View 1: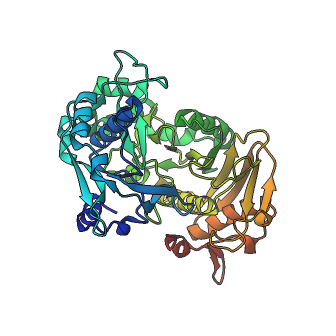
View 2: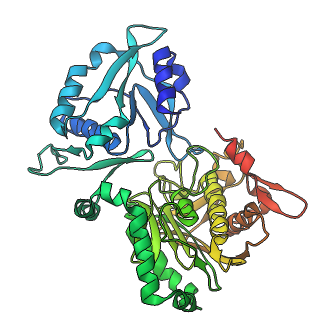
View 3: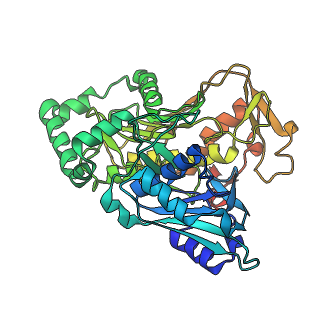
Amino acid sequence: MTTHEILDILKSRDFDRLKGAVEDERTDFKGEPYRLDQHREKVELAKDVSAFLNAGGGIIVIGAGTVKRPEHRSEAVDRIRAFPKEHLDITQYHNVLGSWVYPKPNVDVQWVPSHTDETRGLAYILISEREGARWPFVVTKLFDEDSRAFGNVVGYFERKRDRVEAMAPAEIQQRMRDGRRFDSYLARSLDLMEEVKRRIETGAAAVAAAHVGNVGSQMDERIANALSASGLASSIKYCLAAYSPTATEVQEIFAGRASAAVKLIDAPPELRYAGFDISPGTESRIVDGKLRRALTRGYKLLDVWRDGTVVSIAPGDGGFLCWNNPRGSDYLRVNPVALIESVCLFVRFVCQLAELCSPSPRVFQVMLRITGIPRGKRLALARGPLSAWDYATEHALKFLDLRELPIEKEYVIAQSPPESVAFKIVAACYTRFGHDFDDIPYTKKDADHRLIDVEAIKALR
């Protein structure tokens, strides 16, 4: 839902219409009001509001409880928790934001009564995109777990997808040095300068000649570099990677935001709203004149090298790939929707990128890895879709006891439907667990292929 759609529902006072709404880069839901008698809650309010201010605005709805469902990467509203108006002191909200966020933000805080019970309602904090003209907004007070102030320390936060991210020190330094506005305004010019510099120093022919007959031997190093750059706190990481075994070059990968390659990297394909896509949700940047990297640190990374190599990193735990593990269990359950949808979209991305390469490769070597599985934990994968009767029962599960799951195979992508190639990768994963093809959900058959059924995935709610 858009911010305007949510506002319309709130103004209608029919709050049940919010059920099913998914958190994203413009929307956050809170089950109850901030407890502003506690320093920790004041920090949370300041972080949440400043993150929206730094990312172009949005809305925080208070009184809507959420749950993480396996069909979506983000939490969705599943219950309405209306509360009395006296539980929300609007003046106090403005006072906290005025003293804890600099510059003082102009936000709209309102409580709206329910149409069924006017003594109870929901509240919202509306953060206008117009406030971006006063960027950046910083949190001026930070506390440790014992509520002790950190002294002269400020925090910078941004909303990225459905998350509030603290900016890493290295990025703060870079933005202070270059200036975000200057960087954004001149991004195309700087990228063009980088391309000219590279061609002068190396020559286009040298780049093609240097492709490597041994890109494959560099993949472990490239994946390790991406894993390190991702900043994922989770030890379990999910990696999809692909490379061309023949010499190729992504055209205009450094030619600025208007180039087809950069547009693709900055906005990879999606199947549905809040699905399990490979996009980190940020604009890509040139790294060492060798690749473009889109990164939301601690969440997702997408690397595209000029020789056509692609590396995608996401959390391998409940943050993306796995879910719904019973407390105290010795296994991590792979979410079939996350696995199948992300593989399908990764293959689509690689196929679209191949069309922007010269010469266009016919074959890609594709790799799927789940790394960092803790000792004492097994990977589990159930047969069938999420809606299957036996999906939630252990007898539907099959297990792998290993520290890393590696799958690698060469696939012909030229003249092959991406959904067919994606099925083969998913099937290689399922068969490692001991499942046969008929156990794989969200698939279909045509005259010549087994395919990922994208319409079945799009239909998930």
